[in-house]
Image 1 (cartoon, rainbow, N blue to C red):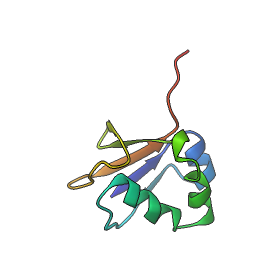
Image 2: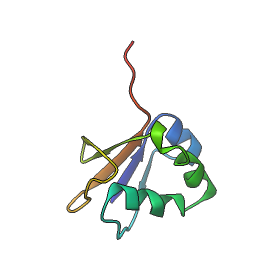
Image 3: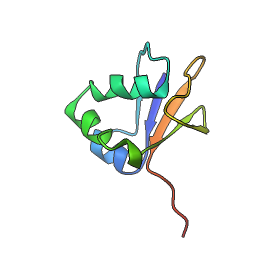
Length: 81
């Protein structure tokens, strides 16, 4: 599965993209797997209230299923300006 990171998440993890093998059934389970990958991942996901997720470019909640998903993106909340 392709994982994409944007904004400060990319900076904290050190990459904007990685491909992972996962058994996660939901976005929340995927986050737990990613947090275990490194201290940088753990730090990036330490405040889930500051993170949004999209599965195959559709904004989702963390309890969303990953069945058939090709891409998950993580990013901070968007603001207008």
